[in-house]
Length: 280
Image 1 (cartoon, rainbow, N blue to C red):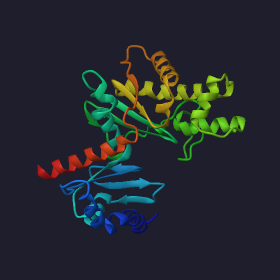
Image 2 (image 1 turned 30 degrees about the vertical axis):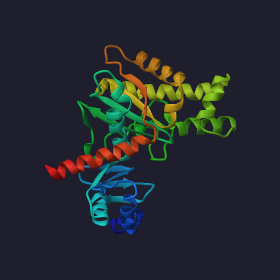
Image 3 (image 1 turned 90 degrees about the vertical axis):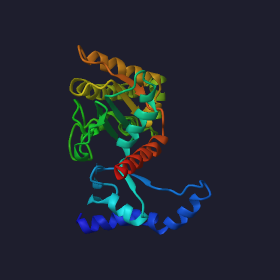
């Protein structure tokens, strides 16, 4: 996609914000006597948060678009900008699951496991960004991984995502439904469901073991659809991970706590950082 066309697509996404800016500023007055002083904008895809650029989004159709600058121009106020999962991960660490770990967490991985697998890494209290390319664990190679829509073969999310669990079960049995229904089937003694979930757990534990050997997280926080899979999922994942490690630090494997609020709180953190930058 050409850059002019990509910018046009991004402008289309942002247009409702600018067209209705006066309306929502007025409406804000009904909620608070203090006028808004900034906006948090989180997007999916590859993101260079420091530069304020959306590097690439397959679903939204943009590449190398200066989204923060475009939003600030349209909204006429500071915009905190970041990746949706990265900022949600920060929120989980500051307000959610990480906040409930005694002593806090300085080294962690946050995985959002739904249709695919998105992730964020924190090392020594700092997000690992690498210009927006860090944390693509869903597309890390795992043994037995299948062909992935990204073009590679063997990606973690082809086995370990909620979407993969549901899709593979439907392909094997013809039964429709989501990952929740597969877990129910396993609890009822369905051997196909058991095999598919076991393979998902094997793939996830393989990737987490690689993380334990490389960045040694104290905690792995799992959100998204599989965060609701219940104790049997987390106990199985913990057991498989422990079996793969020897002298390595064994991370706590925790369900996320914030749910859909993680993104909202992450957006607040993004604008908080932006305001601090402007005041320094």
